[in-house]
Image (cartoon, rainbow over all chains, first blue to last red; front, side):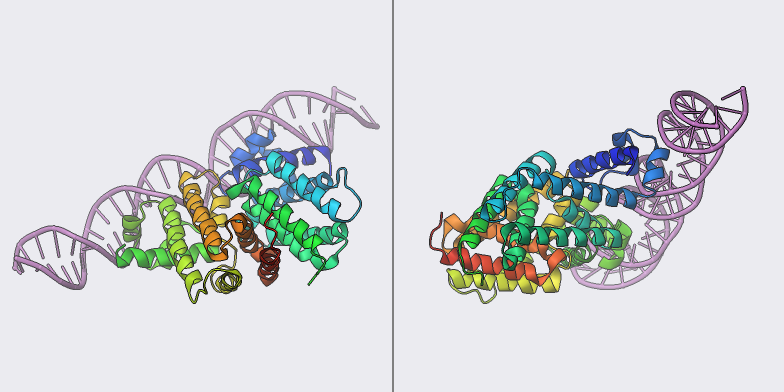
Amino acid sequence: MNSTKEHIASRLEQVFTTRGFAEPGVAELQKAVGASLRTLYRYFPSKEAMVIGALHYRHDRYLSFLAENEPPPGIDSIIHLFGRLADWMTAYAPHGCLYLNALTSFPGNAGVRDATEQYKHELIQLMADRSGQKSLANELFLLHEGASAAWPVIGMQAIHSAKSVAVKILNGGNNE
Amino acid sequence: MNSTKEHIASRLEQVFTTRGFAEPGVAELQKAVGASLRTLYRYFPSKEAMVIGALHYRHDRYLSFLAENEPPPGIDSIIHLFGRLADWMTAYAPHGCLYLNALTSFPGNAGVRDATEQYKHELIQLMADRSGQKSLANELFLLHEGASAAWPVIGMQAIHSAKSVAVKILNGGNNE
DNA sequence: GACAAGGTAGAACGATCGCTCTACCTTGTC
DNA sequence: GACAAGGTAGAGCGATCGTTCTACCTTGTC
């Protein structure tokens, strides 16, 4: 990705994060991006492309954010993951998970749905790898999504509850 | 609420449920409602009012749906609740929780935020009452929100995981 | 110093948006 | 049978939407 495009994607992510997907028009996006309308459309030829570009940019950024100072697989790795999630939500996600937001704003959009599918599979795989317990991957993913989704409603309590439940099921031994 | 208004609210809920909040314009809402534009605006004088009207209508409907055949408080009541949630999502919520959808479609809207706050508090109270364990109310609410939010992404697996985690923490004894 | 690549600024397009308005029809009441 | 209440049908408002376009300005390369 060339650097102008990357810069634009980064700004787009920021606008969608703070303003949602439905409310800002392309004029507002352009102003926030700081480039001309023509340049914006050169790299992202429609509003839909801007949305999907922002999602992919966020995904890459989130994965490397999670990986910082990552301990070896096991319960500590999951605790660390939820700690990173708390930092992420605080810093970058006032309105919750960007993917879920996009999906609910454009329920009929195929591009958004595909991007979300990919995001989901990679995260479930991540849960399996980092917990070391494949059978708990779905439950851990649910806790992750639940915490992100409930964040705009109950804030840090969402992460706290999710982490606490994660520890319980990881210590439970019985993997059902 | 008079019956015309109630009928309109019911149809509005249906449209927002299936089509989201951002995509349908007032013209589409009117067509789905089956009333004239003038009548629609008589009862809900703006699109925002239509959104909030639909949310309140859904809330009442959801609470009485959950209450059907409700067992006495305890673990069975929570299991029953997640069973009802599964039925609800299957029948009425292809794109997840209507409140979360509204909140993410209009992150800046005060009316939507207030309605969601009220919804949240009533559900947390419900969790406390039905589990009989006030200290688990937040965690149970998180599981409920997580299941609703993850539903469009992983479907019934979301409810299954949430219910299974709920049983684990209710049986765990240690309420942290 | 000609030229292509890629940038800015912003006018203008047709379509659609939320919303208001006029004109008329039905129904129940006195 | 006059009248108010509340309904339908749908044209039309100004504003905004996503998108395209023209016109001009850099910058690096041959």
